[in-house]
Length: 515
Ligand code: KIV
Ligand code: ZN
Image 1: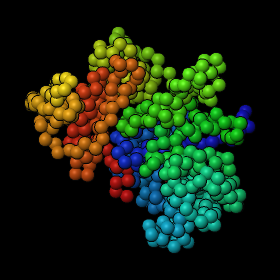
Image 2 (image 1 turned 120 degrees about the horizontal axis):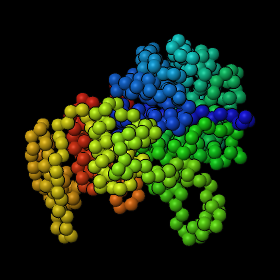
Image 3 (image 1 turned 180 degrees about the vertical axis):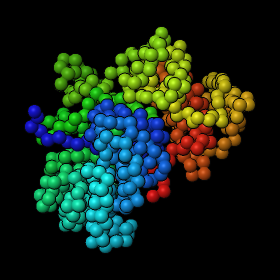
Image 4 (image 1 turned 90 degrees about the horizontal axis):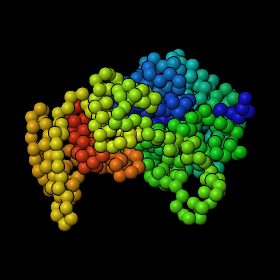
């Protein structure tokens, strides 16, 4: 038995992470991420904000019905209708949590809520009680606690605990805190609030000053026992505290922290890659833990040291966070069963036989071009095939690109639009530009390209390129994905995927679109 306290890891990639502009995800994508979080043994998964949109409700419900080993949580304002909607979405969960919040800083209470502090306390108490009528596990957050007065925080938190909240979250909503000061605030709250022993104190830090992880760790040192965080630090504005950094800091410096997490750290890199591939947000190479260079030693002196004795320059093992676990899994001769089994092992559940057939056909095609198929390839392949809407208006039939030094590239594209084959040719500044211009000649969609990003999925020149495009039309934004060993074809696939998603009703909703 360990003498250390448990540090609860509360992942909010699917809720606060999705609030990153352009990071909205479909239900299917959220489910895939939730399954990996469950495999990672995340304690609480905040699956969404059920009342925000029908899409968010559906995602929370699907995750609650599917994920059984993690507690599933929905956010709600301190309003009856929000709380009831959260409870409805969470009905199928093995273990559920309602997370209700209200702002507590003078600036938010005066200008946003236009409420007196006493009325805010009253509403918080009512909300916690309402949430407790649905579930035993209620979390209460003091929004903008980082700029709230400590005396007021003490009053509202004491009342929320009395009303039945078992987790009290102290968000630094605008990323204003500094580690020592924030840690002291947490320590003081725990000391001063008479019933603080009846709740777990949680922290939720934003990264506007680049201090989200440092602030979270400082709070843990002062008694916080839950950290809210996201994969790759995704989140509103500059993001949230990154899960991988918090978890690995606590583990690597176990000499300093009296806590331990239950996280299976080998799932960190696969989760990071999955989130990056789904959102199209690349991970910077020098990002701690999950960046491509996080364990790469460039200087000769460092390389020499590591070869002689790894710990000279390494404080963690790459394998411990899931690097190099992308062992060769399947090849050209692998059958449908092996393919299905590996997908299941990766937590990828395809909804129907026809989805499995489509993914298997794409796998065989890929295996012809690329001999070694890694887990990352399978994730990309499935993203590629399941991100397609049910009805596709546009289909790529074939394309060719001529690219030569000193000559403007020309792309010829043949599409099927509503079943009818049409072709066009166009020049461009580069092969991708020429291809997009040829597609637009045919589609005349009027969409605006907001982001184009290409990543190699595994290493090596035969790696698949995975392209994400974000396009906008009339205020609606969709992300298109495409993967192929040829990056110009991957680019065309991503653009066509975005065109189809733009046409489909199966849209990605912005999480807080209508609240
Ligand atoms: O940053 C914040 O305050 C939040 C709350 C809703 C917990 O995300
Ligand atoms: Zn937040």
